[in-house]
Length: 362
Image (cartoon, rainbow, N blue to C red; front, side, top):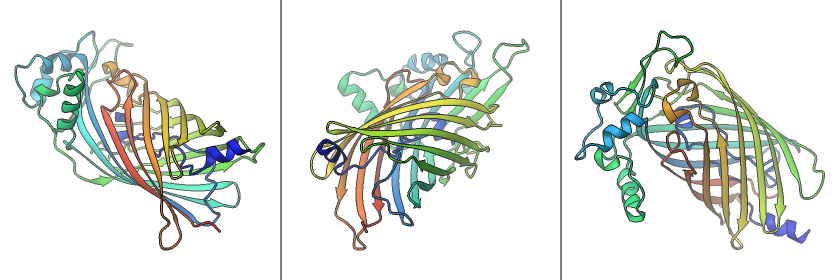
């Protein structure tokens, strides 16, 4: 039992990070790692987490990469230039995404009785050229990483380009698609997610289990690439247990995504999985490591590697702060997310920071 208490000391729980691939940046439901229960949240009291995320995307199909990296000097990527490119290799489409997504998210949770938790998450989104490109280029130079055409394009620029020329042959690669956004849309409301979590009765002091249902409501602009214009739903199984100095978490989920008319996407199903571990580093701080595995919602488009499955790693540091004047427990976190492989569909880098306010103990 001493090991259980030690692992739970100053437990922040999994990082509330969902956005780390282009699909989540465009409004598709993406599941953060969830704990099966929040032991310090009292029934009838709200727990609120406010987070700020910065996610940088630099995604290109092979033909676009080849054209950009062949340039002798830095310059803008234009619609006319992309229109001239023929898909390579094979009869696939062309895509290009150079964007930085800033997202301010508020996640509120309320316990109802001993086992039920109600959740509501909403956000303000601002996509544009951003500020991180010089930092990323400098980091790649410092460690000798491949730049993949960044030095041949404008820093902190914005552009979205999806093109599929269509085919008259059945069973090839779909209907014609042309979605282009090179003007920054400005700040807007993101999608809203409502959730219900039901915790099972504890079978032992170690294991905790729960089932959670989430519904994403289409409150964001589809035209600005902030929303999908459809309802998404998800159900996932949550489990946690202590192990030595760690608290371990596991999630397995099923997601039903609605369609996306502008991108010619039909409703589709996805299976997701995630694991996380938290280890105290002192009386008030902890280290959190996460792996999230999920398919891309763009795989129907058959735009080269934009549809590949991604496995994302999150590394975070949490710290318990002094209680506020009203006695609320306060904790903060910072985290970094990146893709473990196949960078054609996921984030180049994603940074998050937030603060969590919990009701005071009874």
